Image (cartoon, rainbow, N blue to C red; front, side, top):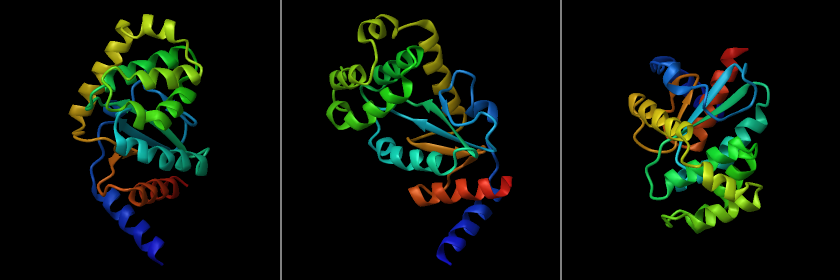
Length: 195
């Protein structure tokens, strides 16, 4: 009963909340997981150095695992913490090398060891253990396309009203009540509505 009540509340709030312009949320350069044609798009404005983002990482992974055909995750960078820009550049070079997912996982697992370090040395170690070519990554991390990605994500986050990380949007609707259960409820409501 409580789950049905929560879901009904999430559906009512989602229906009453205006959606954000999808062009601000999903860009061609954005890393994504899940089918591109999924009926539900979950956008996370994410800071790799953010402890709350790390706490939500398994929650988001479970949502994807529970909805393999219905939910697509799109990650956008918002760099609020010291060392965040370097960590995001590591992730973007990992993407160019085809190892984004294992490097993201490794950075999240190792985050407590590097998130206070402006040089993010333990992040580099974790990325290397996950398969990144560190020498190549260091040479490419300041590339114009990566700089443009980070700049565009920052501009879009500002335009979408993002003030903290993680900030979630589900099919353009902002998550108004922060927490794992409200996120699950909003995703579930959107999946049900798409059927």
